Length: 219
Image (cartoon, rainbow, N blue to C red; front, side):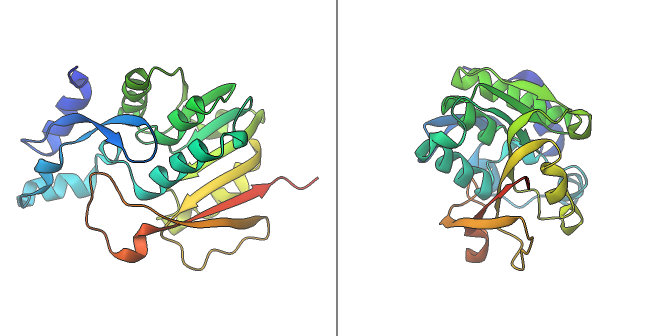
């Protein structure tokens, strides 16, 4: 099976010799189209660095928090079984796919980036699951049982979204490895788990510690 042309072309325009290959994610039973680890073993030239910084192809990695959230859902399918789920900032679609595999009644992958949604479609097909897709979280109605969130709080300006999640879903499950002073009256930490970005970016050990937070809408 070859990588989808649109995704391979987009990656090649960012990193000239990069290619997507299907890779199994440890502990999940899920495969994703991700950048070939061999492409990460050379230095990028200044122009490639500029492109990566300006429009990072984040959808071709499985970030640590997404991987941890997917593992959690595989081990605890009762969180999503029979429920309506939206994966916010879906990226590669790892959490959405994990929810679908765990028996969710409906899963929507939501991301502003059209390439990310293309990656979600390709990865859903790779894993034989059916997802719905959305480009605008705020256009969604308040009909979800659970909002899944992974690797979104790296930008602290996104912290107010913690309240917005409970405006579209009755509960939220948030995985994060960046915010060390996480404080919110509605969110409690369920677990502190270890994970790494795939392919491995050799991130500092502190970013391999992923906190999983849960919140429920006040009655």
